[in-house]
Length: 447
Figure 1: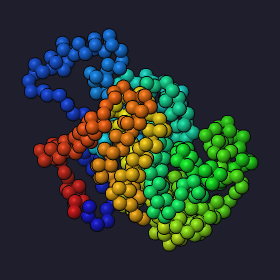
Figure 2: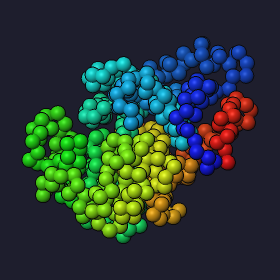
Figure 3: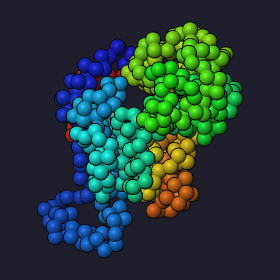
């Protein structure tokens, strides 16, 4: 990539309009003569229809695209750092998510934005759509509604359900923290952790940290009103309106720290998933942390504190959500491989155990290929990581009894590797054949 300063917003606006979106459907079966439609459509298509009717819905995974297709669903109420911009304005993000699903994980994907904000009606709509897809990815849905929807859909759907703003951010954050702690020589059950922000990402991160060995009494979680603690004035309202946050208030911050700046004093780790900065986290707060502090400032497009400011204040390891700084905590390291794994074995459910297997696989791959202060997680282009991660998820699904298919390790690796490599080969062919044109503005980005 060129080192020339790029106006990404202007370029994205121009190229999105030039290409007319980012994805399309492409035939995967041969059509070399019109008689082929006698197979792919009528009269031949009636036979797979009858087979599914007789055998039950699971047979649709054998005869249709369903086994490898996820629906990316949003109501547009919390889109990136833009907030409640509505479903139509959120569609470019859902398209982009589908592009990442396909290119990185070999997962077919369909973006669906819904003009409905009521959680019960959204759940009804998604349940009604279930026969069309093998999995559901909830995206950019406001908190705390997203927690309820994920739990409810997980109960009533017979396909995997995932909310990337929760599980995706949490598992990649955990993977990064595992390796960051190795670099600085600290243990997860001994460090003091500040979670800055108490929305979808950090509430799930808190849950994963506990499972990984972090102690609630060593954690302080901060929302827009300050640290959570048992005696806070709004605790009863929290109990009714956001029981997920309420549970955290009951379990953490036993000393009842009430001031944000004091929460940072003596902390070893801060994981921020709040609002775009800069200046949301102050340098003096970082300066009050312990030696070899770890700072994850994950807000996009601008982190809560600039990396160089955190370093100047004494942080040893700094991560952000951006690709133009070291240590990008990027959900794209998680969801493509997680879905690749569950789809390969046609899993009925997703569980925290499967997501933790993904986090540990990411961390292990990064460690095996070399970790240091500016590389605690792999980069998106490291395709081998997706293979390892997907295999870990698939094997855990088989172990837990959620897999419709039980494959050996060698069979898993063969299928997963083929599916992950296929989109890159297709892209190369399409570009070479001129089916995907490279406009001048895009070519100028090349080294």
